[in-house]
Structures are given as structure tokens and as C-alpha cells.
Length: 386
Image 1 (cartoon, helix red, strand yellow):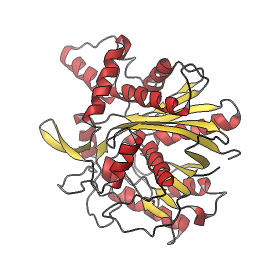
Image 2 (cartoon, rainbow, N blue to C red):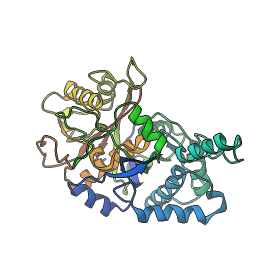
Image 3 (cartoon, helix red, strand yellow):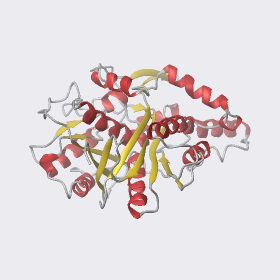
Image 4 (cartoon, one colour):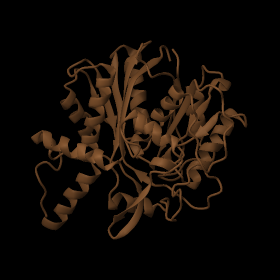
């Protein structure tokens, strides 16, 4: 990278809450935020956002007639985007780009409209415009009245980090000086969970920790879904308000044998991590916030990739999916949030049932990973100082 990129704010809504102090407090607890909820008469493991925040979503929905028909992914994005630009000191109407994506998109509305179509043979006027892929970024742009490009995409679980890559390219090129990036996911529907069950990757067994991400003794897949939206404000160069800096980016795609496969040693992660670290001494990387979703293949392949790149003397390793579930397209931004919090507090947040990590005195550089179906990997190196 020619110039580091400053992260001047990050806002999120997730099972952890939305307030940075509450989020950090929840990370300090060794308890999972995964619970059970009934879908079509069956209890399923999920991680849901707090009830009081759901009330805020409904208040936003009622605040403007045009917001009444929007999907929850959009409403969540509007709320976190408002908070992020406020924290950065940006204002409505400023010149900044927007790139917010989603893996599943307007899942709740799409299923609702499709069910109505099956029952009546008709659908409503708003069915198409409120379920298109560009729905999230365009409505955030409408709400913030930004002067700049608005971009949408879906690259499954690496969507949010691909938004970061896009923004870095725009900022480095000089075509923009500010970019709002992130991901939003509201996948807790019967149909979405049925799809995960069909893949045989969803958690089934009652346990203190239903999602066993980073547990290499497990014999079954234990992925659990969560809901979240998270965005960050990016600006080029040194900034006195920076929470952290992006100093390396990497990306790669596996040669796949199956639609959801990843190679045994996650070749995509090996390539993306090496690219992100090409100008960095490996010993300077203090921690890695891994993608690690709680599946047998996904967890072991990423760990093997880390060993290939770093060897046995690797950085401290962690993941947050045992606590908040897998939030698909938003998950990479939650990884970024955890990385920033650990650097701010100079405290490592581990996985309670995983092998203890050899802790370092200072946490100044953290690598974050995300990968989607088909092996679309992204790695981003964050640093505490410019």
C-alpha cells in the first residue's frame, strides 16, 4: 500500500450490543451470547441482537413513511451508518463514498413476498425495489445524503472486508478521500437456517458453548447464525482521530472442487495473508482474529494456513463466532471491531475452551481474516500507530 488508511470510527449492532463499553464488557465475559429460538416448531441455536436495540429498529421504521417497507438489513445499516459518521465528525451531505454489502441481502422481505406470491399468485409493487442487492447502500446514501459513489456487492462471508478493499482502492487512487464501508446481515429466518442444516454444518447439540469455533477436538460441525450490521469510516493518511490504521491488504480465491469448499490448507488464506504481510516482519504481528466459523473443515484449514505462513511461533489466535455466531457478510467487520478493541485496551480476548495462547505484552498489530463460500479470502493488517 502506498499510504496507510485511517479508521476514524466504527459502529456496530450485534448480539454484543451497540455501545463500545457494553461490547467490550461482553467480550470480557466468558459466556456465549448464543441462545435458542423456535423456527417452524423447532428450536435452533441463534445469536440475536438485544431487545432494546430491536425497539430502535422499529422506531426507525416508523420515523419515515419510505422506511416502513424496508428490510431489517437496511434499517440496521442506516442506524450504524448514522452513528459512524457522527463519531467521525462527518456530516450529512459531505463528500464520501459508501460500500455496504450483504451475503443474504433482504432475506426477511424476500421470503415474505415469495410466500405471498405462492399463496395469491401476486406480489406487491415494492417487492422488487426493496429486495434488490443495491438496496442497502442506496438507502444509506438516501439517509445520509452523501456526495459520492454508492456501491453494493455480495461475496458471501467476506463481503464486509471486500468493501474495505474497494474503499482502499478508491482512496489510494485519489478518486475519494473518505469512504463508509461494512456489511449487514439479518439471516435468522426458518428458510436460511434450513439451508445451513441442509449443508450439515449447523450446531445441534446442547452445550455451554453450542458453537465450538477453534476447538479441534470436536467431531461435528457447530456453526451458528447471528445477526449484525457494522460499518467503518475510512480516510486516507494520518489522522488524529484514528482508532487504527490499515497498513496491509490481501485477497485470493481458491481453486474449488465444490460450491462451498475450501482447500485442506486454505491456499486462499495463505495467499491473502502473505499479500497483506508482504511489507511486515511476521514477528511484529501480535494477534490474528480468525474467520473460523465452527465447522470441521473451515476451522482446521484456516489453522493449517496460519501454520504454513507463520510456523509454530504464530501470533495469538482468536475468533468471536463462539460468542456471537456467524454473521455472514457482516462478520469481517465484527472481526475488525474486536481487533481494534484489543489494541485499544491492550488486552487479548481468547476463546474460553480453546488452547491458551502465549500472551504478548503489547498488542500493536492485528491481522483479521474472512472467507466466503468458494474460498474468497481477505486478510487485512491493522496497526495501532501510523
